[in-house]
Amino acid sequence: MEKEIFEHHLNTNRRHFLGKMALGFGGVALGSLLMPDLLSGKKVAENQLPLGLKHFAAKAKRIILLVQNGAPSQLESFDYKPKLNDMFGQDLPPSVRGDQKLTGMTAGQKSFPLVGSKFGFKQYGNAGTWVSDLFPNIAKITDDICVIKSMHTDAINHDPALTFMQTGAQVGNRPSIGSWFSYGLGSENKNLPAYCVLLSKGKGNGQGVYSKLWSNGFLDSSHQGVQLSASEDPILYLNNPNGMDSKTRRTMLDHLASLNQLGYEEFGDPEIPAKIKQYEMAYRMQTAVPEITDVSKEPDHIKKMYGPDCMVPGTYAANCLLARKLSESGVRFVQLYHQGWDQHSNLVGEMQGQAKDVDMASAALITDLKQRGLLDETLVIWSGEFGRTNYCQGKLTKDNYGRDHHPRCFSIFMAGGGVKSGISYGKTDELGYNITENPVHIHDLHATIMHLMGLDHEKLTYKHLGRRFRLTDVHGHVVNDILA
Picture 1 (cartoon, rainbow, N blue to C red):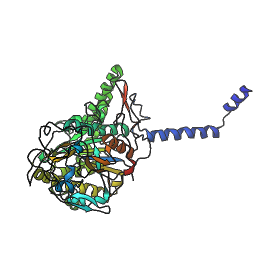
Picture 2 (picture 1 turned 180 degrees about the vertical axis):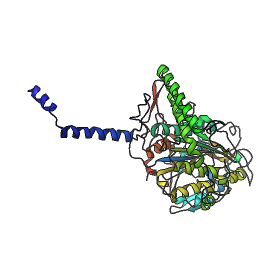
Picture 3 (picture 1 turned 120 degrees about the vertical axis):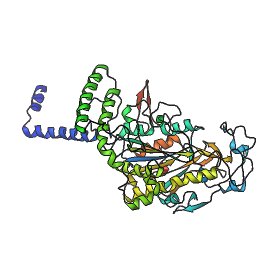
Picture 4 (picture 1 turned 90 degrees about the horizontal axis):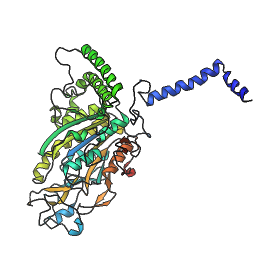
């Protein structure tokens, strides 16, 4: 009986054969769409995810992260606290401070005099969002943004706090958030990297930024952020040297790839195929990058929207416009670092200059994406690494003051990419020192960003030194209340 059943299955006519084969062809086609390298013959690292494979439907396709390096004061931007003006010069109550550790810059102060914002606040938009007079252009787009006033972090000094914001850990050698997205999703454009970095410096007191902030950490080096410069060559060493044309470069790269492949087959070092991919990416970028980085061809009304500085390479405005062009061209993660927000003294003077640097261009970026129909699929995030104290650091005068680092609460805003618009989320106490409603930790922010991009922060992992690492370590919850 069993023999008859077996022989029956062997008697397949042409119609049955082709019907069954069609299912196989369909599976191969679907697989090649989900995993572009499926049929390439390339070896995939043991713990590397297939490019473009998401855990669930994504709200956003791309991210632009506007890092306000140095920590802008929430009390002069989005967290309006009139009570501080009423209590000008009075000492911070010990009951409010609790056991909060202070930096070495204010730990020795005999008093902690409260000081409110020197700048006025007004309500804007349908929800009456409070915005400082320092940011008149951002104030006009409050119906398009979500202000989170209850951010908090574990770090109290710049380097660990910025490293924490960028990598999910205060220590080094961890992949940057952009590297995680490159690893998990890859790029939408094979001629451009998945992760690009832009730097600018404002008029205030700057904190340094270092390449470790956009490092691939223990991930494949092809996931490292690619830094663009403000020079005539946005990406150094991308152009062919004198005496070498494109055809010669192609021949050289082919031979080099063959030699590297032999080395990989002998030693198995995963960095060898990573280098091959980087050489190939650089070759393809030679055509794509010059056109994308040329902002001179932008229409006059776009240049006017971003402000005159957008035509000055290396400025925040120029980088915002370039970020739009890169994102529009399929770069998965674009990160801007704008230095100068470290106002320990002369906050009144310095913050005016800093705000003027970023206000128009930040609003223009969101408006520009919206008018192009790209905001719904692009997540824009504006954030520093921590907040500022409600008391004065150093000498307090009627017209000027400074503020120290404050990890317990700070404000950021997000726009597009599946985030609710026109809302404020979270609250702090009347003195702006402690969170009283809906706290959002850095790990929660990272988990939410990954969720919006279609990734489960608990599932996107990488095995290193015997344990599985992830961006959110063993923490983090998606902030569902801000999801559209």
